[in-house]
Length: 546
Image (cartoon, rainbow, N blue to C red; front, side, top):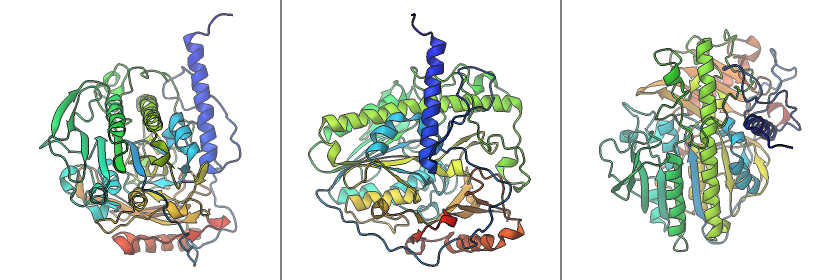
């Protein structure tokens, strides 16, 4: 019998990837089983929507709410913080972030799932409260919401690297407490524009991308003030820097290493088959990310996930200001498929790079004493709610992958209690037994890893992309509820327990007025919270609120 052809192998690969995606979807949504309805074919008409391949399994979508619902958004009593005490020596801490990786990308990262999630915990409801690059990364550096750390968008007033105060960050606190602090990869948007040799305070060993951050084959790395050009694929450059840092700092003092991969963020160069080339001069000239050469076209022809919110049709429930009210034509939909294809090809490289870090930790005998976290700055959509990008408040944009393993972390566990970017920073400080130099908005999540699922109030907020003086929306996410108020007064409100794809906004429905008023009050209470005035209470989950 002859060897299978290239097309047969590709179909087999795509089918296995789709089935793996559905398995992860079942895990993250608590479904017992998910039956595949189709596989992801190797070819077909561009822009067609077929098999589900996201990290959220298809659930029931109803036009009306179930009967007997509880009108209270939060219970009346809180849950005491469970006891948790760090034991043994202080661990090394490895934080790995991918840029713009959504929870929907996790099924395409088998090494991350196996090497981190299977040996630790997977957070099923990890949230970026301000889901765009700089605010989210600044929250990881400070443990604060964007309205407190002040870098609320990517450029302009109150945006980008110039808007961020870097003198009292998490690495500064860790370094003062005896940690070696290490960095490689992307920092904050705008870093390197004025002084590419600048090394932010608090870093023992700095390997930041200073020039050409989004050029995947032409970057310059600031190695402790010395500029070193690189013409290798960006993910490989950052991977090798990270592996080297792990080896070099073995056995001296505890270390904290933050590895920031650029993929799957959009970047250069424009490649053959990309929308910016084939659709140049049209409304479909979307930017794409750049996969590694060995991964380019690996998923050629793969179709977009079959999700009810993909190219959402009936948007009468949403105010005119919502991005979901946009309409995409056939050319744009076809281009969106290519964006999706490039993204899942690019995360393959990140996935293998994470495996490299775990391999180096194991070979240098540091894995047993290293807490490893994998996450992203924000989520991303490629056609869901008629949008390509981030910033807005929809579920797939707010949710990020978050997995964690290491000493003190339970194994083989899914944690459904919400966690945020500020919580990750607070947890890192707690693991290192280090006091923050800033008032913390986030919560140490270590005591809650073994606890029953809890409800939390998470403030969410977003500003104009290039103007931090213009707040676009503010709101809250509370368990199954999402509520936001736009800057012009329009509102959206969702109960995701029966509307998981946020297709039916409830703000105008009389039957839901009690919940609307409660969510409005919580938004007013917490939109400008700071430290102890931020929501830090945990509430027991009842079946009606899960």
